[in-house]
Length: 98
Image (tube, rainbow, N blue to C red; front, side):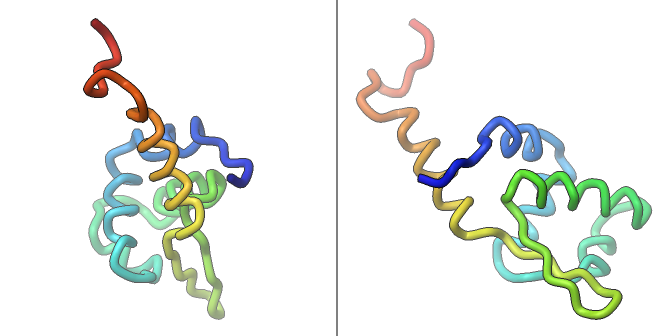
C-alpha cells in the first residue's frame, strides 16, 4: 500500500462540509463553482476546504484556465476502504470495547 496518512484523511472527513463535498464528488468530477452552489460559504472558504481534501490525497484537482475541477482519487479511496475493512479482520464481531 502507498504511504497514506490516514489521520489526515479522517481529520479532513471529520468536517461536515468536507464530507458532503466528498459525497458530491462520488459520482463525477465537479467544478468548484458547482460545489460552491451547494453551500452558503465564500469562495475562499471553499478553497480552504478543498486544500485540506487535496493535501490529504483524497481529492485531485485539474485546472482548466481559471476554473478548478475536483474529483476523488480512486487509489487513495480504495486504500482507505482496505484500511477500514482491516480494522474488523479477525475481531469478535467488530467490537472495540468489551
